[in-house]
Image (cartoon, rainbow over all chains, first blue to last red; front, side, top):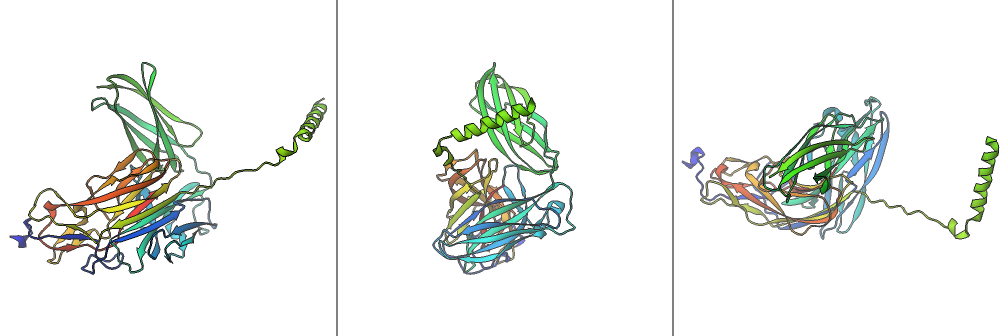
Length: 271
Length: 177
């Protein structure tokens, strides 16, 4: 029975984090002892304004705040932002025309740090003369990983350095294509807003929710909205709780840093 | 007339400048340059071991806890996040069975974060991936220290009888955009 893959279990042990080199396939290997590694990276966000045939550079500082020496490895990456704001690391080139991964470099890309040591790493964007000249924002970056000199670690720290490059003066604009507020639970109202970036720049936004009942202010909350790239859509949701039953007017205002604010108003009946 | 008026204004400006007390000239500017930054300190036990035993349904908790501490300063509207990534999408057992890493579920819990940050979201039984699974995120603006515990469980219903050992190289990654 166990031979046919039936889910009958004997002694099954799954151990996370025993092994060999980074990126290797799972294999049996020596056990890594308990560990504590520390990595500080700054800045995490780099914004360049370089066009075709131009070069831009910045320093990225890395620091080993742990008690043991460690190796910092810079891995080129593409990335995008999930709805919750989390950075999703992708293979270089995944973002296709929006990617500048091939034009970015970090030197040195592999550095050893003693405990307490700080080093600068040079981040350079070198765009070829054939790079598009149309106004737009491109992005890629690096994943910086810290590993012990032995290379064996169960769980290690890392940080992303996201790089934007703005070519020309791209138009920034977003629209609010849909706004819906519901009250599915007692004393709660959930706003769902569909935001569309119909510009060619990325949008780093805040959303302000103002709730009034019979003209009286009940809630006024401002929340950051994760980066939204051109031609992308995101549904922003926010729940307000501890509301008394009754009818409310809700105003939602999006500030994307442009010359105008985007605002919509709707009504909700809280149970 | 227009020239006279301009001349008068110019003379007045000079007079005002001359009348300023000497101490007013000793001014200075204060420039604050606070860059985005993240510190990630990951403390892990020798291994996290998941042993479903005789359980064949539901999630079984694994032993040991991984702890992540540090600090993050983000851009004004930048969300700060911690993600955890596995090094391989499948784990091969000694008898040749394979186990998807998504069978290993991660739960993250606040263990004493402090400072300025927006709404916090923590993962509950989130499937592991190689691309990165969100452990915690904080809406911006953020200037804060965090302390987050990561615990794991395994979906016993997808584990065939075997002994599995997963590669090292799991990462806990701090990000902001």
